[in-house]
Image (tube, rainbow over all chains, first blue to last red; front, side, top):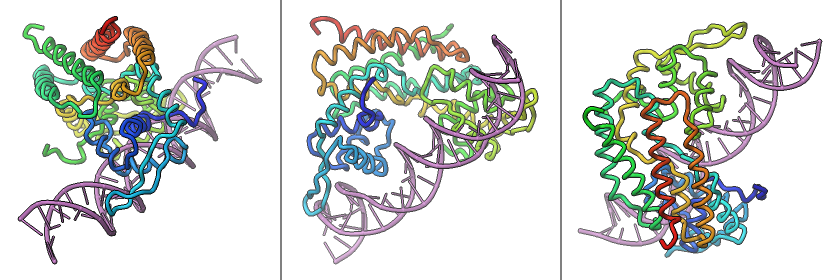
Length: 170
Length: 170
DNA sequence: CTGGTCATGTAACCAGTTACATGATTAC
DNA sequence: GTAATCATGTAACTGGTTACATGACCAG
């Protein structure tokens, strides 16, 4: 990529910028709420992360923050700039990074399956099966149909894989 | 969980402790090599992360480090203690955390599919398809058969999902 | 009007990153 | 013998976390 360095985004920055672009002028708190509501649960969406992140984006000229109010409270409303739009596009369409596997807590543990007894392994897989099945209902409200389908595919894959490993005589 | 607080492990600590338990006495550098070679690519395995982590584990009594040598170089060799073994077991068998989805860079982007044009979306999915297909060969050497199968299932799921989305007339 | 929650932050801490330093080992 | 790389670290920076502070809003 011969992209200007100031346009490069971390994944959390990209996600935040996407939210701002989608939801029009937003306050930092609205972004916090979206992160918290997200089914991804990878970022906590803590205020201590989001508020400085928004200031960082503003300092880089990717968003503008206008001082305003929310009722009697004063608040800053953020909008993406053209430069922010470019940065967001570049991040969204970065196939190299999109193809990565990210972090998978189950795989991390199964790398050490040899350290478990058979009974422990069985218990773990059953516990994971129950909890994975429960994830099916937990769709985030803001997600697109495509993201939701990927979520569901992930769950289906997981359950099929678990079922096979739990099958008697395997 | 009524687990003593000093037994709780972060995911990176758990992974490191698993490596130490699997490979017998190891140096910090050996752990670095394993992290770097891991197909997960989530942690960089930087020395600046691993060396302090090993000291932290030692300070908590989960491993012991014995001063020794590697040829003429001096090095510290780490072994898990019984307490470390307990902590590792608790981390490995924590079904709640194992069932989590972790971080998925593709899903993070697809949450904003509405911000792409049709052509851009098509390009992205094709790029991801090519790169995902290439992942099939990239099995980590230290991984167990189960972890490898989960890796492969993830790839198959991804490819099936991508193929469906790229099918003409959908 | 008072107790709880919402909204907007700030501060201190912690863990992981890149970049650097240094000495041992290996390749040529 | 000298250059490259391996092995063992350290230091400074970054960014995300929890915990706290403060004032607005809302239910009884």
